[in-house]
Length: 131
Image 1 (cartoon, rainbow, N blue to C red):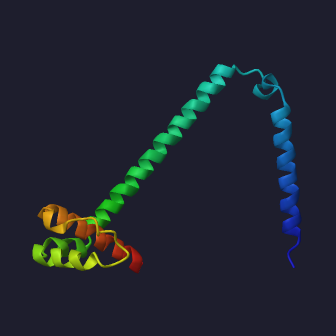
Image 2 (cartoon, helix red, strand yellow):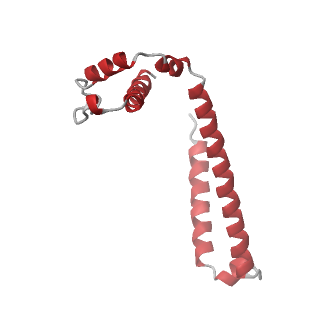
Image 3 (cartoon, rainbow, N blue to C red):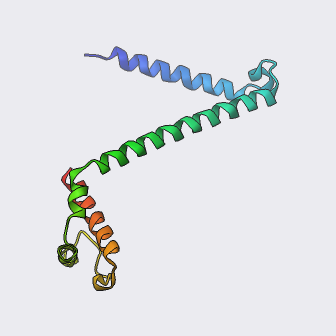
């Protein structure tokens, strides 16, 4: 039986809650310990901006990696080799599939590029279901 970690966790949470309450109740001057409030604020804003920049870089790196992975998939190459008539036939059948909302689209009026784009979207959704 491991009851001590629970007690330890409860004690820590109680300590932390008490500490936060005391910190909130303290006057700003006591919390800042003589530091200039504007300097502390400016430092905090610099830290926040640096964190935002870092997160932005991480998101960009993840997006680039995902894009690279998608481009290197053989399925993407197979789509480009399909006959547009076959793609249109596939979309006509997909109109009857309740997973997709194609009923309002007039497939005959779509350009070849739009048809291929729609086909890629549906195939992407199907691949997502398989995973």
